[in-house]
Image 1 (cartoon, helix red, strand yellow):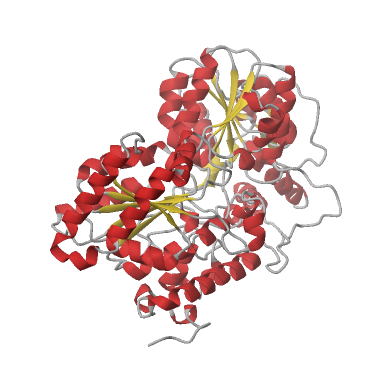
Image 2 (cartoon, one colour):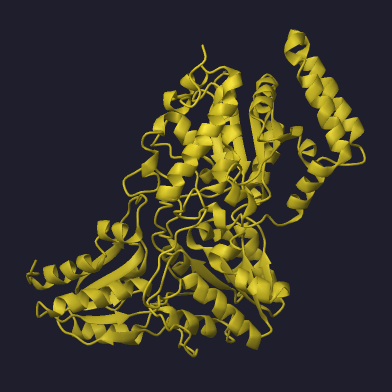
Length: 640
């Protein structure tokens, strides 16, 4: 029975409802789903282009597979808006990425349909292979496992590791390559060129037509289906002797490329593929932003996550400020790097697939031969930077704090053990905001400061960022240099100050005071300035020190502090376990100081998504939380 057109999506609360539709209605459903995403993201913000590009694929997957028994693993997670809407979260989708609302990514705690949490890329194939091997071990050869990998995630090394295992696992796994030539920025590297060759090759397209013509007959052959598939495979291999297939060489049956926006053809293809046992890959060609004119015709990077916009005109809403606003830290980084590189020919820039997000694109435009986007490959970015450093160059390797976690071994093994002076600029340190726990830069202070031959620093403002970057390009004895800074704006509208050297391991006194000393690391020190202004009205006068370095610590300053203060508060936007506050406690213990210490920072818990200030308040290191900590220590009372 046909459901009334125009009301299809409203009647779908689960994939079971989707399966009640006649296949002829799926085009209409895709149109409704696409407009639902446009309506919501235009008003509430969020990721945009990636989910529009997989509308037809999402509908086809849930129409053919028996989810959640059959398991879909999305990679990267911002493809999954349509998936969330079709799996019971339509009516709450407006809370997506909002504090206490739905996560912007698949999340196991949120839904049984979210089989694997994902925020970092390139994880889906390994996870799906693990699921498939587990099913095989339990004797279930009917369960399907599908990894949907896209937005440049195939360039990540983990994806190749997963494919390598999939090919010999003999497990029931289907890899769907959503090929849209984009991550957040345009894809780069040899794999991109290889996939382009496949999609334009007359040989491949000839084979593709023959494959799909034969696959369309599989259901008519019944028990002989496997024999037909074997013949098809042999035909592919003999036809492509002169044009090697990367996926076939990994023992993955390759099918495609297919039009990822033809929902009926996708349904037919997936229905056939689910009956073919073993590891296989389906190559889908899609367009990021499909179905929304401004996103199709405009800058794909802009429309990855445009913020709020007018869905009719495509005009992206931007806040208008009457007074000059401070720039974003990443823009200060990008412009300062070019400024330094103009004076020092040894400086190079490296980023793993985030040139616009990190503002490395500024150097890539100004000095394309000295700035490198290496794709979604953080491990390679670090070791590549180490290789540059062995030849006397000065690499600034810019990686989001959360993504640097993926290259921890390379930092130790390839950089610090070899005494190589690589500069790591960690963007998005601290809470990342609406992207949530997969993207929070909570751990970098703890994991970087435990490595020998490593300097760890954090600027309190734009001027300090520039000075630290200037200091990092000066000659030094083989130590790596980490500079961490948060997502978002700084505090200095007039930020382009003359640069000067900062003595490594030195802090600075921001404010004299008595009774309590507040020690801060990084941008979060500006909250302490605000807290101190509030406390002055209560006749409380704490001292404030911007430590700047957590490794090495300014021990000369710390000796003075602990000789004059018996009450100390540390403030950081990183994890308390092993972080900045822990380093102060270690200094106390090693030097036999006695003091009451209160540490403020990210607790030993997974903090969910929300606006940065909301999360700072939740963790009690917003200005009010800092002020209250001083009051509690001094037994004062803050007037309400």
